[in-house]
Image (cartoon, rainbow, N blue to C red; front, side, top):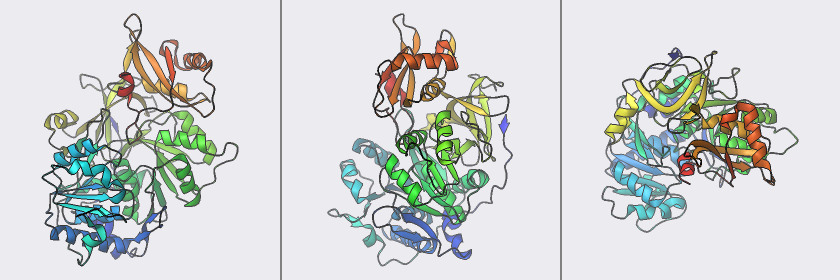
Length: 521
């Protein structure tokens, strides 16, 4: 068993909003800026304003007849209204349901009906997208529009909270459901993942404090949006636990916009995903170093290719801590640590979590053997909403099945091998797509790649690679060079028999490559 002893997991406070929002007032941090926008009007909100406004939201929800344990869906851009509404819902005992802002109307319709949300908070720029999903919905009783635009018959946020006085925070148990997050998964079918109030504090006590060593002087920017489990921890849980400041950007995190933020707004902590780090390296000035105020960078979503981590360190002088988390576990439980970074590995268990690698029979595997990763920790989900069979398959006692394949090195570090359904055999030997992808991406002409199995003329599986090249790279003759490159690096049987150059790869909103779509081509 791969274990890190639990260190400093705090005592339970019933309603999470009490710890993350209201305690700052008694500790003298009320005037500290909690959130600052980097775009538009560059608005900001202090911890005292957030405490009051979230309590006003709670009062307005009660006045509108939205009761405790009912669900409030939130289709919101990352603006200062988001934390007011999220924590206001929790203060009212209402279950917040942040929604991915990149989905289609038919998916929103499924989620709204599945969750039976009675309230919907939506950014005005997103209302036209979700409006068709509201047709025939018998559960929604309240729609609140956030932003400057208006819609006929829809109340605006400023009107919704007008004339209300702050309400008392609803007295919840630490084990009460606080919020749901809909997991896109690798298949694109969303599942409602339920989380309790104490899970938020657990992720701070384990990862936020022990890995990030976050403090009230930090300025945080997360390219991953708040509606992701990863982004929720980055932008709200960790900075709000210590009274730090979070930078919010409502737009799409393009390489240029992210470079502007990290060089001009001076964050000390930056959270991204491997695809974005690769794109940032490609977009950054080629010859000079990138000057920033960063002290630490973090990556999650997919395993970070070693060349990207090394390249970023050379460009910025700052390490990327590659970590592994999931919506089901709320945040990162396996990670590289400060002053203990080995690129190409996912690191070791975060203090407070226990990890196991098991074979198909549930038996623990040995060093240098591949097994499925199981994780146990206090931030685990309470289960999937209305998906009993999937809940029983994923959550077995204190253990959560991740569906990820890893092997453990003699030094105790874990190396990512792929998803359960990504692995395939070539000539009777298992091939991990990520290993081949990492080898291809090490070539100086490649931005990123994805490898899937394809049957040859004899019906046998062989690797096929989809490769995105750097700008202005001539692909002529490059396919054969890449094949030889892989052969020399990781083994002759693992090289891709076919290479197709593409402009981009299909991904989930979290940046994970959707290999199932490539397998279907």
